[in-house]
Amino acid sequence: MIKLAIVLPCYNEEEVLRESARRLAGLLGQMEADGRISPDSFMLFVNDGSRDATWDIIAALHAADKRVRGLNLARNVGHQAAIMAGMMTAKDWADAVITIDADLQDDLKAIPKMVDEFARGYDIVYGVKVQRTADPLLKRLSAVAFYKLQARMGVESVYNHADFRLMSRRALQMLSGYKETNLYLRGLIPLIGLDSTTVPDVISERCAGHSKYTLAKMLSLALDGITSFSVKPIYCILWLGLAFILVSLGIAVYVVHAIMAGTAVPGWSSLILSVWFVGGVVLLSVGVVGAYIGKIYKEVKRRPLYNIKEVLGGE
Image 1 (cartoon, rainbow, N blue to C red):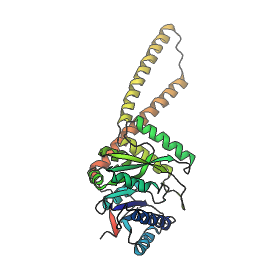
Image 2: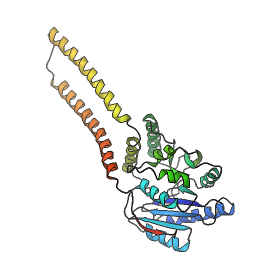
Image 3: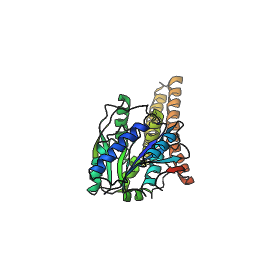
Image 4: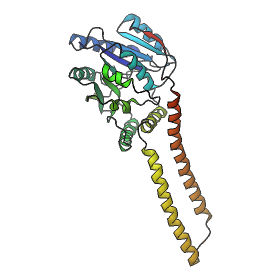
């Protein structure tokens, strides 16, 4: 039978942890009774530098149920790095690892389907959102816009998939070979190339608490997703520069004609407008190039993504 690990990144999730552990324990028990997974399957809660009682609750849950394991990171490293820490730790303990957020808004009914697809030979199974009515309207619209922008930028990813997925130990071993500091798992995992499939994921309301994924964090993730896997923004700057050269040639022709015809009138407004517009485009272009240089700066330092402070279970 399959030994399954369920990895849950946690940041200030004290309000939902007990309920999440209860529901997952019931699910593990049901799948064990159905013969899908082995009795030593477990859930691994990754504490991403929480400021509340998240780690204390994880420790208490572990003491009450050995199927609950804990990974305490030394500091807050972000959602993507916390998921990576959990997967890289759990890959040595299990045949397959499922990642899911601790709020359990993703569909738990999809987990047995993922396990079944893994048993059929798929190394990667993506949970794809088919219904997001529980999400705020702004989040739904921005997510759709982002997925479409990714596709236009040439980023290979699974449409409407976040970080709810199953990966085999073989896939995780291959993923461990990618030593990127600017981590964007949704674009990185499809590059592995192993056989994959999808299962439907119906999003539900949080049982308690509120989302820790702020607009700023979502925008930062979107920027990482594009700049880590596409150089099209750089080429957009190139084409924009060529367009400005053509416009300037047209203006030069107009100015020469106006001088020869004696209709040239000195204009302060048009000059200032042009200066501000071109200056804004130049600054924007420098900013895009700077973002890429900044990512190179981070990559060449080769700093570790995370440091593990404490582990509960898996001895």
